[in-house]
Image (tube, rainbow, N blue to C red; front, side, top):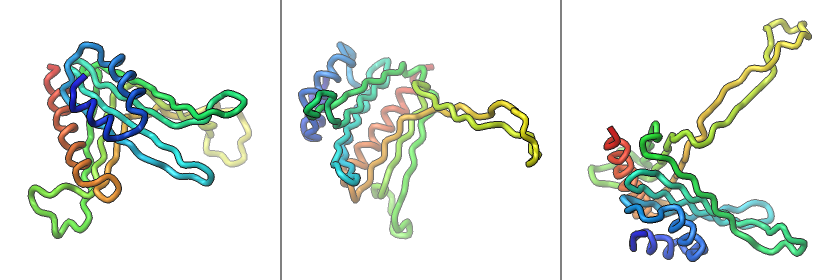
Amino acid sequence: MSASLDNAVAVAGYYPALANAVLRTAIRDEPVRGHFVHAETTFDDREVRRHMTILVITSTRLIRVHMDDGAGHSAEGAHEAQATVESALLSRVGTMALTYAVHHPEHFAEGDAPSELVLAVGWGIHSRIELEPATCGDENCDADHGFTGGITGDDTLVRVSAIADGAEAVRVLEDFAHVLQRAIGDRE
């Protein structure tokens, strides 16, 4: 595992020993071509939850590690963290979209970082099926017309903003996206 990835996980501060162990198992002996680490905290009515997403490009794969806080399954409800590893061959990455959001675009100049950046990667690991009852269009018809619906790819999505994450995080994600773009373009 690269020293810069190890350092980025340490700086994120979200169970770095667990994150590094999971990453080392996923990466094995492949060289790391690029990485992005994003830790975030979310709030709801009763809880503060932390999440971390780590994207890694190796010579052959795109790896996504996502870690979440959670309550344990024991009777005393001990704290736990869960880490999920997803891996796709770079040859299976179908699409990549990078959305730039710029606050006050009238003041934007070449070399400025965008206010927000969203990276979406279509890699075919998950799909979502949405079904609903089919109808014939007749409001008075009570016949069973089966179901209709669609399958939607559930892409990997990462969003950073200069306000919440800092301008450096936006630049780091942009750099990662350029490495990914080259990596998926090199597969031909």
